[in-house]
Image (cartoon, rainbow, N blue to C red; front, side, top):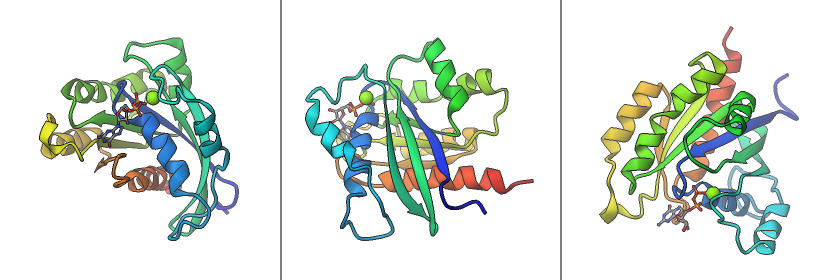
Length: 196
Ligand code: GDP
Ligand code: MG
């Protein structure tokens, strides 16, 4: 059986400032006890930690956190690595690209350069994994800032087609579509596993 204690190692990639750490916080909040809907469980320490460290959004911090969700009626323990830093190839990046089962590639729709960086990650992953068959989700965040948009939905879709992956436009500020992106990635990982 595939269910039960399955843990999914998810890595969040993307330029600094696109909102990766903001998500981190939201996932904890959204899965808090009492939250109705399909989610259960909660990494209770997350909210705690976020109150302990006022520099939570330090852009240089790499952080891992865990949460439990229920996706398509099966429990999933997400072990999420929130990465930081630039796009150059480093030993640390190689290490987490080796360990990730799935990747959430994030850019901000208000930052064209972050989109250009997002376009580089598949190749960087390939350099480490030597395959393109890695579960991915592409995310354009900050769609609440429509008036500052620099990257169109069509451009995001087109990159997702190139990546052969799902695409979500999200807003961490509005808590819009955050879960969908995580769920989409877990579905991709499961789909890959069920293939012969
Ligand atoms: P990271 O470097 O990718 O971890 O980015 P952060 O999570 O630290 O976010 C960078 C800044 O963008 C912070 O000030 C966040 O509050 C802000 N931010 C993140 N997501 C959103 C969003 O969806 N909308 C808006 N308006 N701001 C956001
Ligand atoms: Mg961060």
